[in-house]
Image 1 (cartoon, rainbow, N blue to C red):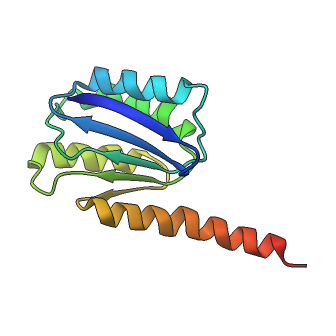
Image 2: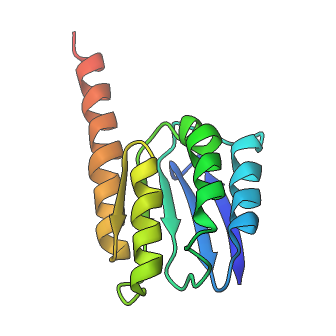
Length: 137
């Protein structure tokens, strides 16, 4: 349990996983490590999987949101899909809505497959359309 990430340029995706009782400080450390990783590509879409996350989302969120706005948001250039457990309590759901709203090009989902379809539609479909347009004489 905890938080971690995986950068997969071959698959064109960065996945971030939160599981269990993860403090916002630990999450901030994970995200800071991600955006300073030498393999990080801000133009890759991100899937943040928060199913099973039971960490704090109350008043602790204020400081974390400053980090999101000043450091993480400018580094995440592509679409971001945030997936939560459909049975998440109201306080954590509100916190995840606030977090998702602070990111550029982000959507909140309660279904993992729907989040993947959205990312494919937003990122890969437009990339292939742009490539096809550029290859035409």
